[in-house]
Image 1 (spheres, rainbow, N blue to C red):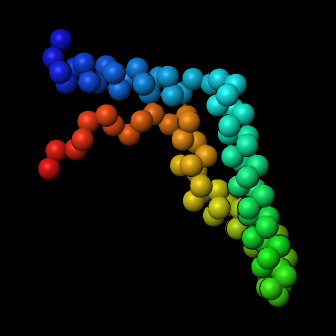
Image 2 (image 1 turned 180 degrees about the horizontal axis):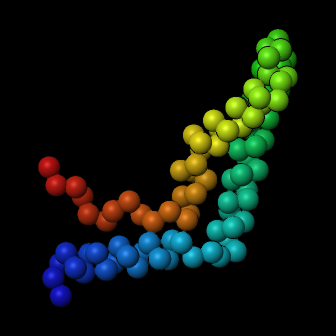
Length: 91
């Protein structure tokens, strides 16, 4: 078996393992999500305390939570995403 084929087979196996749903992964995702929501809620509270009245509107709050989720997606789902690559890119 060639080196490239072996490497692809290993990457495929690691990707399949990463997608499997296990209790530790789910619990870790729940904790990360709780921490993200807590941090965003504190950010909103600080903004409101600082006098940013526009943060009281529902669209502004949804925007803050949505942007926060999009920015933290890679961190949240890191346990379920396959590894980027085992090989170093050639230059």
